[in-house]
Amino acid sequence: MNTIDEILPLFDPISLDCMDKVQLLNRVDTKFMFNEKELIPVLDRMKEDYFMLEADGIRCNRYESLYFDTSDRRMYLEHHNGKLNRYKVRYREYVYSGLCFFEIKFKNNKGRTLKERIDVPRISRTISGVQADFLASHSPYVAEALRPALDVSFSRITLVNRAMTERITIDTGLDFSNGIHERQVPRLVIAELKHESSKVSPFQALLHEFHIKNISISKYCLGTVTLFPDIKKNNFKPKLLYINKITHDTHETYHDSPAAAHAVVSGEGMPSPTV
Image (cartoon, rainbow, N blue to C red; front, top):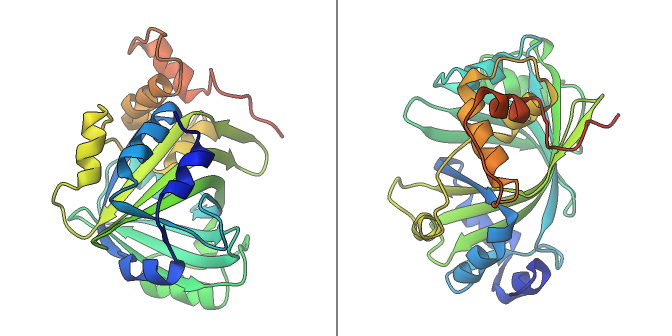
């Protein structure tokens, strides 16, 4: 069995310029979560049909994001409560390339995700100037109502199918910080299929073969639950139980009990927060 470092060079590369043709800023997103031990066999089945993004010789890129929310975490709660027509606001930096954007994501009531973004020099702990104007013109929020809510970093592999109709991101090494505490989520892989059509993708069919479920929780919501154990989370508990199950040894026995749910949402079984 190949290691991850051995399998990445087996994919034909695609450049950032070519990948721009598949930006999919108005798209359907489908997320999957699984244990990292399944990543190599999944990638091995994909290498003939997908290009892999390569930038400056790097194929596994590090991303840094800073999410903003209101003081009462309205954006998080709207996601938790299943509200449609909801927003996320963030800065995102592509560490190895030095690119940085201020982004607004909008999930509409038809299940489509629309993303608007502008170039910025770097991640900022404030929203001001051009970013404040952009926020006001593309969302119902104003800069004065938002504050930094969560830092998220992770490593990402990006794949594009040879027909140039879909893009897949595969995220590992998740690290969450709220400015006081930090927590990592080991062994979790979050894969996201981004495509314009709602038709079944070959990637979806492949994951079905591996018995990998289509299940979604945003990194912002997962990090918020992880670092703020007292926040409202009832609607996320089944997903948190699933994450707990797939990120632990598969030989262990799991029970969907209140105690198990408490273990997930309180962070038991995960590294303790570090200041």
